Length: 120
Length: 110
Image 1 (tube, rainbow over the protein chains, first blue to last red):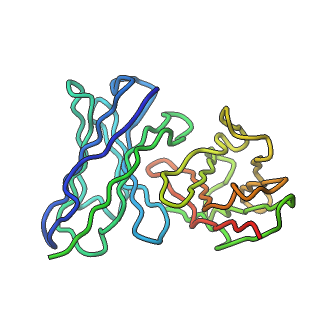
Image 2: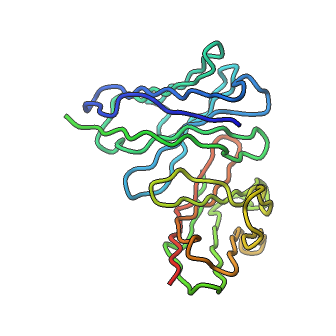
């Protein structure tokens, strides 16, 4: 059974870079039928897609975040990562990683999420 | 870019039926699959409907999904409402370059 687990600092200072990793277990990240995604949810608010990455490194980012977002994949470690630069309080959120079906864009399964707070 | 708009909240008594709409602002709702996710408090979302109207194994047949081209919207219907259905529900779809989540609907079982 595929499982995803987010990890990274829970506190980031304003203007610095948020860095998270999603470890994939129970299956290979190099499957050609899936993308791998980051999604976030500010406290008490809705879900926001951040971006998607294929095992080859091909990426799609939300246009409004594109200038600050970089996603990468490490097939040898079976994990993928997110970097978000120049963070502000508005980037405080629960960050989820998930698998995305390549054709249908279904997100399943999801990681449990990791809370990142931006504060000095 | 497009937006998926959902009602902020719906409420109904146990045993009744609720329907949540998801209206796409531009582009055809039928052009790209719609998924529906259930999010209980302090939990990650899980799929209740995928590919417009398909149920994952383990999701009861009280959950159903549909597409209406005339209103450019998708709908999630929960029949025989149970207290365990109380949660937030999000639709999700996509276009050529991005994925979009709906604004979310809180379902309250009275």
